[in-house]
Amino acid sequence: MSKIIMNRRQLLTTAAAAAGGVSTFFGPWKHNRVLAAASDKPIKIGFTSDASGQYANSGASDRRGMMMAIAEFNEKGGVLGRKIETTHIDTETTPATGSRVAERMISREEVGFMVGAVSSGVANAISQVAQKYGVIYLNTNSSSPTESGKNCHRVKFVWDGNGSNFAQAAVKNAISAYGKKWMLLTNDYGWGHDTAAATKKLLAKYGGTVEDEFLVPQGTRDFSSALLKIQQASPNVVAAAVGGDDQKAMRQQVAQLGMGEKPAWINNQQDWPDVYGLPIENLFGVFGTTWYYKLDLPGVDDFVKRYQAMYPDTKMRVPGNVFYNGYMATKNLLAAIERAGTTNNIAVIKELEGHKMSAADRMQHHDAYIDPVTHQVQQTIYLATGNTGTSDKDDMFKILSNSSPDEVKDEGAPGACALESYDATPTFDA
Image (cartoon, rainbow, N blue to C red; front, side):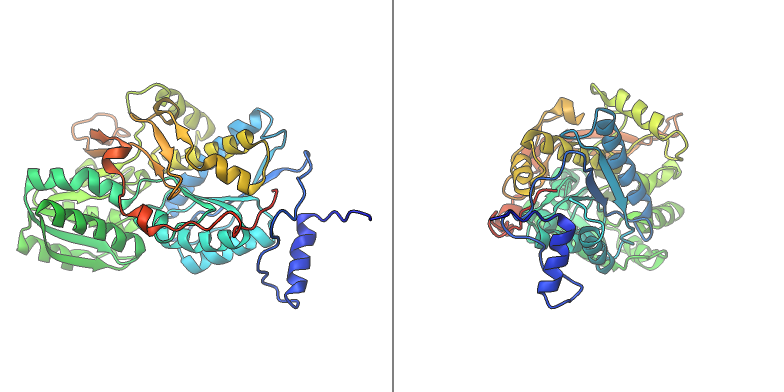
């Protein structure tokens, strides 16, 4: 009997035809139907990051991190003797667009892997499509606890710290330092709600109280109503879960009202692209991050120099946490393919699950690992504040503390996450 060899494009066409000619297909393969890719065929990675919308700046930084990691591998000959190629489609900070982008990436662009996200709603939408087809998806920069909790998937790996991690690092100490009377200022979408929920849970645990919570829609530019109510109520602490361009507007208005010192402000996470270039007085309060370019650790200075050499014209003269996450996620994906010795998705997933990363390799203070139960990277969490008095306009953060993965682990995620089985995940060679 002659052996029929089908490439990925033929399989997609056949699957669509089997569905009665419907343009949307429901899984191009099941159980090892695609033979190993030719050694001269590039490995294709799809960038699913924002180029417009609330997180456009972070999306651009995310992509720069991915591209630097890929450039470094390609300079060494690629992975398994194959060059890496990329394609990018704007996800527009919109879940519906994220879903359409993922469908197109897989069905038309024929990507073997997808990398990138800032909005947790967009990441969740992408990951649902990715799981349907078995395409490994690295959520680089969205930090809702649900991404490694109820919205986890076998193909998805979450590289950022989440709202619960940052809250674990900050809430207890803030109650002791500033007081028990708290108010919350929350972006009215998934990440904001989930981050606020993590903060509320810890406040209840450590004796704090939520006096009020103000929900602000994405795209908010006028925070005056909420800020005046906060000023009148005079809480001890305001916990803000506001991101992207919304946060820039919030910080500017808080500073204009002279509210940066009192009450105390805890911003769950501070992405570098959200504040880079702002006046230092706008960096009030304490906030979380996963990395900073001034950490006194081996490898950091060289990493910064490589960034500046590759991106000499970018306005953001030093890399931040979003760039770092994009770089680290992509680097570790490509390294996992090398360890597996194949682009087979199930084999690569197994290489990523439970993978341990040294503090030296991560340029952090503590060793990190990928939780095999939730697929979230468990890593060092830093607390920082504005670096007032500095003469270096790029050195905007003052690192206050670092916490080990065990100290800030999201205890609720394992119970909420139910990864699909390997057998229920379509398998293929990219």
